[in-house]
Image (cartoon, rainbow, N blue to C red; front, side, top):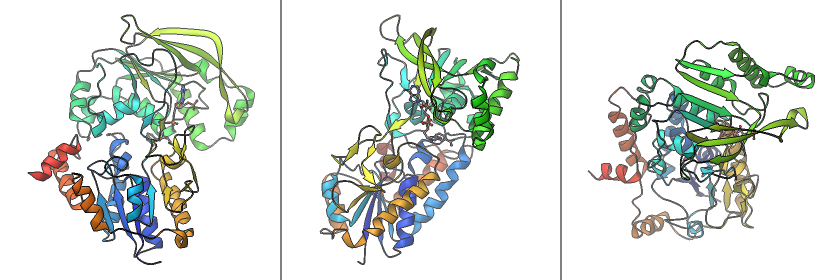
Length: 447
Ligand code: NAP
């Protein structure tokens, strides 16, 4: 089969790696990469923390993929809203969904609806200028924040809240958030895990950075780090990151308070069971139950005890992982929050719909993890080449359909213009100042 035409839905890392893998296998294929936003690169722009700019250099590789004449960008096109999956099928031999996992998970406890019980994702989206989260607010005139969860997102959020805002001035953080951080009265941040130090999901490099924050005392209780003989033996042969995490936590627990004005408490063995409110509207306290751990040392589970602790709080940021969002009625695994698939083939009984990245495997791993994931999916596509359905409509017809529906497609040359404009707005001080909506980007293009 010649002149293969593929659609990739989502221009984040898994989509870009999938495009690359498709072209390596089929240099003559055409690849059309869709995104609902005006800009490509997904989580690299809207997930990676502003002070981790180096990680964003991976976009230079992705730019090279877009520079190939076989590759097109269709930004500002929302699949499932502007055009259905069923309609899209006519234009492509295969469609690979790489739409990530942006929906929050719920704790399912009382008081989760209260004002200032928020999702860390929304805060991340706000400070990274993701168009969907620009109405998010937290009260910076309050003191105490509890972050629920101990993954790297929790670490990012804690760092951004506590870092000297001057150090964020030369980043691409949302300028409004930066102004708020400059007058922030948040002083007391708690990052709370339901299990122990050997089960925390953060990685050592990220944890170490927390210990280096200016004017921040990092509090770790020595008693939380006591290990049983079995745990000590496990740690001895554990992966490097886990050993390093434990060492860093131990060092932090031994550092005395030195008059810092802000505190970050890293706490273990606590699960929130309830949020309460004095005025019936805004969260004012959180109740935790104290957990014990049980089960195999490599896979300990948190088991609640009868002991509970209630403490005052001003803001709750839930950072307990993400879920994907089902598109149209494609086969869905509701437990995992991913498409139902086999090695990337979405299980709808046809050989046309595929998936990669967080919407395929769940929200885990770093940007590079998506490369192997997308290679696996593309191998599956290639193994089905003879079974892929024929195309019945041309790309010209697709552009006409979108135009009839009032969709202004943002092409890659538009993005080049917008990218330059964002960088110019940084005035040589910041890497860029992002547009805060598709509408703002479009009105810049129309000028
Ligand atoms: P994550 O690493 O899966 O961490 C989720 C955290 O939430 C865990 O501590 C988990 O505890 C906790 N949790 C889940 N359900 C809970 C519940 N019901 N009650 C209390 N706690 C609960 O997720 P993430 O932080 O969102 O990160 C997603 C992925 O992006 C990860 O692979 C992460 O490494 C990556 N990332 C990397 C960077 C970086 O490299 N700098 C930055 C950001 C994100 P349990 O372990 O007990 O389930």
